[in-house]
Length: 407
Image 1 (cartoon, rainbow, N blue to C red):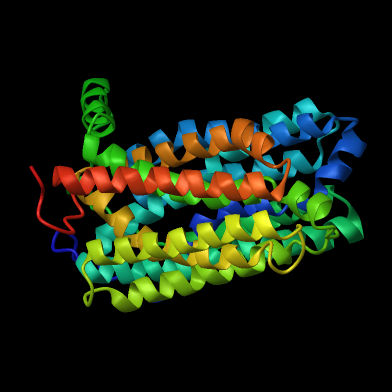
Image 2: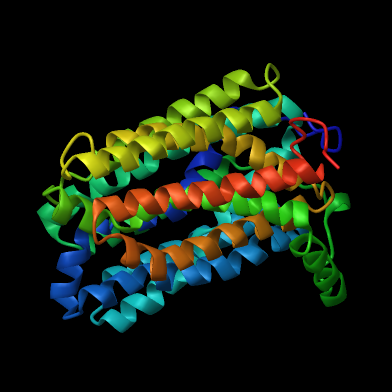
C-alpha cells in the first residue's frame, strides 16, 4: 500500500481496472471482421475503411496526453465517468453512420475517450500500491485485460455474421453503459484533494517539457511502445493476414487472438509470480530473451514454409508471453521516474504508445501486410529497436540497473 494514500483498495478493483483498460483496444478488435461489410455498406474503398483505425488512433494519441493530467487535477473517478459516458454516445453514433466520413468523425470521438481507462488505471494502481504489490496488481490487470482482445474479434465475427456491422457498435455502446454503471457504484476516488495538481498553463508546460524531454522516460516508454507494436501490426493486419493469407473466415479470428492472448495471460501471470523474487531488471531481460526467440522462430518458419495454420500463428504465443513478462516492470519504471506526477507521466507514456500505434496503423501495417514474411520481419525489427532502447538505458544507468553502469 502506498504510504501517501491510506485508502484501502476495494475488492475486485483489478477486474474493474482491467475492464477500463480494455475498452479502447476492445473497440479496435471487435469490428475488424466487419471491414468488408462496412466498405460495401458505406460504399468505401478498403483504404478508406482502414483509415477508420487511423481516425481512432490519432485522437487516442493526442488525448492520452491529457487524461492523466486532468485526473491529477480533478480526480480519477470523475474523469473516468465522463469519458466512458462519451464513449457510449460515440458508439451509438457509429451504429447509425450513413457515410464513411461520419464513421471517421465518430471513431475519432471514440479515440478521444477510449484511452482514458488505460491511462488512469495505471495511475490508480500507483495511488494504491507500491513495489512488488504494484507489479502484482498490474500483472493481474494484464491477465484479465488480455482476454478482451481474444474475445473481441470472436464476438465481432458472430455479430457480423448474424446481424451485420452496425450490431458491433450497438454492442460497444451497451458494454460501455454497463461499464459506466460499474464504475459509478464500485470505483472509489483514489487521489485525495491535497495531492491534486494544478491545471495552470505554466505548470503544465513545464511538467510536460520535463517528462517528454527526459531521456530515461523516452527510452523506457519507447521500448514499451515498440514491443507492443511489434505484435500490434498483426492486429492491424488481421483481416489481410487471416482472411487473405491464411484463408480464415470472418468467425475465425480466434486463430490469431487465441495464441497471442494466451501468451499475454501467461506472461502476466509469470510477472506477478516473480514480483519480489526477481529484480525488475532480470524480469525485463527474461522478457526480451523470450521475445527474441519467438521472433527468430517466426522469421525462420515464414522463410522455410508456406503460410498456413498453425505454424503461422504459433510464434505469436511466445512473443506476447515475453512482451507481457517485461511490460509491468517497464510500466512501473516509467511512472516512478515522476512519483509526484504519475497521472501526467501515465498520460505521456500513453501518448508515446498511441503515436507509435498510429504510425503503425497508417504506414507500417499497409507496408508489411503484403506477405507473412514481411510481417515477421517487421516484428523482429521493432522488437530489436525496443531492446536497443533498453540496452542504452542500462548503460546510461537510468534503469533498470541490470549490471553496474559502464563508463
